[in-house]
Image (cartoon, rainbow, N blue to C red; front, side):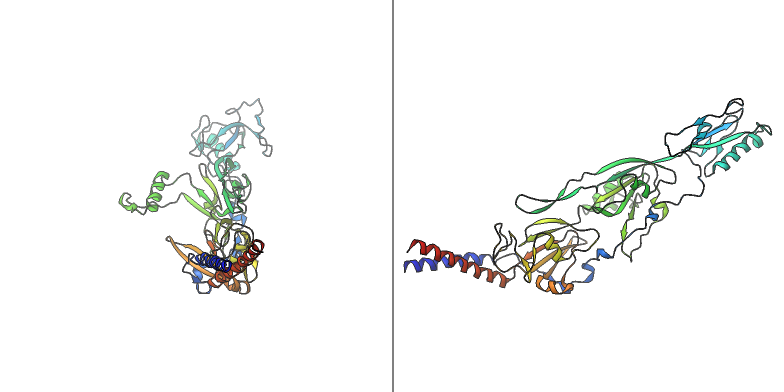
Length: 435
């Protein structure tokens, strides 16, 4: 009798402890089939790559001169002696051709300064046109060179260059790690690279800047490139404006007019067919002082919680990931009508950290999704129905939180299984001690 009373008391205590596991956190959620389409996101598989020719400028058929170019000029008896051949310049760049004449730069106003004549405007002219303009200045406007002695040579010694700063965050900066406890996480190392590149005229565009620093952005980069213009609104004023907006204050109290942020140009690299990229050739042409910024996709992650061990996972860039694939990627087994348990997915209460438990798997998932304006929507997914009905497989969006939960019947069933297991172990222990 004493043994039976002790056993019953122990079973009652175990039942009470297991019932405490039913008092979990219940989140009000909307059925997946009833969620408005605007909250479901657009499939990434529909995106297409930008045509690379849109990232470069179309150079003119013949090179046109401009400020910063260095010309090789030889004017017999004026710039160079008649009994001496013109000097030959061999450039350091092996791909450039040698040039003749003395170096004369085109100044910032687009003119060249030569002896005995007024400054000559050469901006926008070809080498042939520049030669004709210089000859006209010495033979027509000033009549310095007589007919037959107007030997003039004009060559291009060095093209003008544009210095661009390229900052890239995406080069292997985000890594998925597994902690000692088995949880998954995304390491934020942010080992960005930066380089100053000097681009020749008519090659000073986005495609050449990216090609000079490693090529087009990879899978761990955002689908757009930011170009910060070197000239525009005051950067300090812009930072103050953004700070005021983020703090919920009215920036109009101190600023007469909100400045139009024209310093940032967004160039999409991938786009949806119904959202064609709206930028022109002028937008991808870079000037000295501009900054090209390639962002990493460090925020394009989703989080797991509940019966599934907690952690963070990187979302793929080029294909869609639904709720079943996201759970599988987070090391949750898909099967048996739902999610079978790994270590850390146990019976009632969901969560332990030991070995794999035998019991009913959880079949409910709650997706917490952020909305504009600091709002949130909770979406409930029946994992059993999701296995057979693709409409139930909600596509995962950046910063989603997937909470895997047990239903009430699954909790009760797991409690019963645990009681049977406990009773079996208790009988075995009692038999060994009271034989």
